[in-house]
Structure formats: C-alpha cells, structure tokens
Image 1 (cartoon, rainbow, N blue to C red):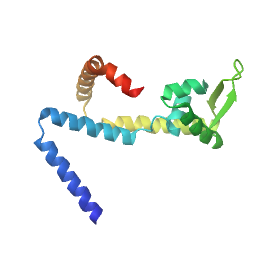
Image 2: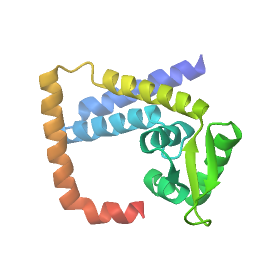
Image 3: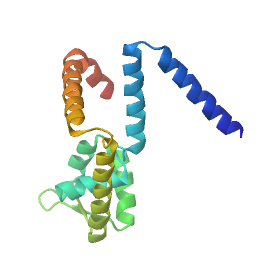
Image 4: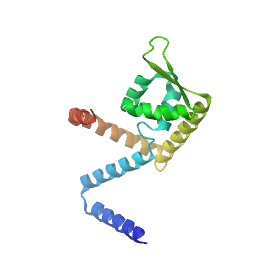
Length: 164
C-alpha cells in the first residue's frame, strides 16, 4: 500500500508542478514526458530486436557498418551479436573480400522474428498518434520540424559534442 501512496503523491506533485508552470514550462514538461514514454517503448540502440530489424532492412551487412548504424560501441555490438548467434537468429562469417571483416546476416528463424518485431513496431507507431486526426498529425509534424530545424541551427554543435 505504501508504494501506491508514493505513486499517488508523485502524480499529485507532478500535476501541481505542471499546473503552476507557465506555457514554456508546460512545453518542456510535455517534451520530457514524451521523451520518457518513447524511451520506454523504444527497443533501444543495441537491443536484439533493433538489430534484427536493421538486418531485415539491410540484408547482409558488415559488423562494423552495423555497429556504426546502431550508434553503439563495437564491444557492445559483439556481445549482443554473440547472443543472437547463439540463439540461432543470425550468422556471422568472414567476408570473402576481406578476411578481417565479419559479415552478419539473419537466419530463417531470425528473419521470422525480425518481421514480427518490425510489424509490432509499426503497429505501436500507429497507435502512438491514434488520438490525433490526420490534420492534427500534419500540424504537429510541421511544428516539430520547425522546432527541430531551429534547434539544429541553434544547438547543433553543442549537441553533437555531447553525443561523441
């Protein structure tokens, strides 16, 4: 029961903070909440599902290119790929052109699981905006593109340094 009381108190506090914020504060709170929700729903940079989906979309790819595309460290990629290989979902083999390079591809079972994960992702993406009409989606997209463009020109360099 204590856990439920804490959750209710947290909700009440967040509601109070939101209601006492000005418009800019409310925008920031909404962006933060959306970011939190998207992170919770997202597969993650180097998750097994994301790797399977990338391989489904690209076909056979070198491990180095896959790692770069995922934006993760090579050691992290190797660890996840070893698990996927052990589960029989991918195959890693040396490249015919360069024996120092490893090619990664899906097995038939991996292709099935990747297709299923991609379909679930697409359905989730549709549901995320199902509360909006088509006109509202277009308006939101236009506003977000405007904000993204402004923020890229305004903060682009400092954001890039934090990601490196």
